[in-house]
Image 1 (cartoon, rainbow, N blue to C red):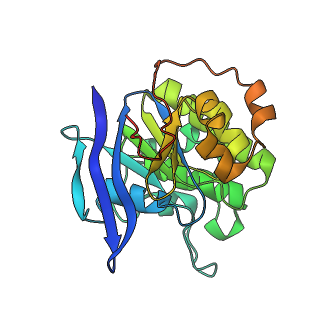
Image 2 (image 1 turned 135 degrees about the horizontal axis):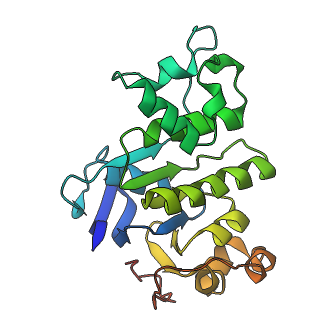
Length: 248
């Protein structure tokens, strides 16, 4: 049973179509990544899913009482604000100390609870944001380019943590990312957006699709040759050479 699905999802801004007729679904335990060029509608799609944007057409269906954790691209914090990690984790709603400790441990930064936010590196801060998203024990964890600004080693470590969370918590994970080499090794399915779903399926299938190669070239071939991820869900989804295929 899917945790969340979209049906004919269309978003318009000032008469311009940002996303057109997107069908999508994600089930428990899956890691699905959204890729696409700048302006392709990736973040718009996520905002529609979490309810920040009302669709112009179509709908978003969620499992009853679905809990979503969200990690944004970035969060601006006043560096002069004296705010510890532990205090930040309790904003805007007070949290039990034990829950904060558990969430930080799951994000791999249990030693940062007393550190000031202004003293954290970019990678540490992103893991704190991840921990904050884990506080409500989400069924679906959504990450919007959460490794933006991290170096390749930091990004790879972050995505490894995400895979561990899938195994330990059993939650589904939906990511938007531009780091194609990492995405392809960490995802069960990939959805390529360019205003619509132009192709989708397993990483190998998407990487070989003409639509994907037209957008990104063949640079991920080496990474895919090393692809060893065990798929918990087998999909026969393909890529529509006319650009009107739907994920799900």
